[in-house]
Image 1 (tube, rainbow, N blue to C red):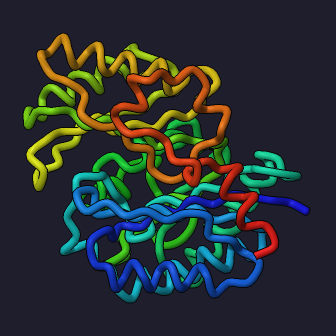
Image 2: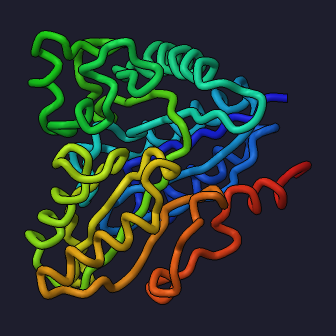
Length: 301
């Protein structure tokens, strides 16, 4: 049996009634296990972690689209996290008995079907994309929903599937295949957004920092603090412990202390190697946040 993970990111993190509808939509799909879901008010975004075989996972993705297109309007959506679509990103990740190539094929098939069913333009990214310019998620999403119409009109930025026109309320969606990624944030005890942005620029790969690290500075306005928001795309090459130490060190150079750790979604147990007590003091990883634990507890359900 193949076991594939899918981690859709939906542009809604505030309206609990819509989030509950999204959760129910996934849970109603037989043979798909919803391992985790989390929502962030500041980012105005929800992340769903589900596993299953290819066909049921596709059905779960379509179920999310049914709710999102009915209840999310990006013309009135605001949040700290960049977004291109109502269902913003849909990655497929091999877990057991599946290859990255099979996940890429699944991403292409799913993207094509999304465009046909919902008339939403779809971009492919990472291993599903054949265009080097469009492999990186941040490149595809640059300009966000508000800049999407202008972007589509430029050479090389027609969608892979669907109309060359922005869906009025849902924008566009980005579908791809990748290896396991860790969404990791560190909150800082300051309201100075420029500090978070400078730290992010220092540690991310595109700024000459660590390989396989994507980072940005985000203001958590309701709390009066800022955040270094990161994606670690290869935790074996660049461990969490290394990134944690670097962010804390850079923060102290700016006269600021790290306040909290935050991992969004689930994390493979191997990714926790080398973490110190200092890390745990800022927010320990719960056992139920570990991917293998959640898989074990949900098998047969």
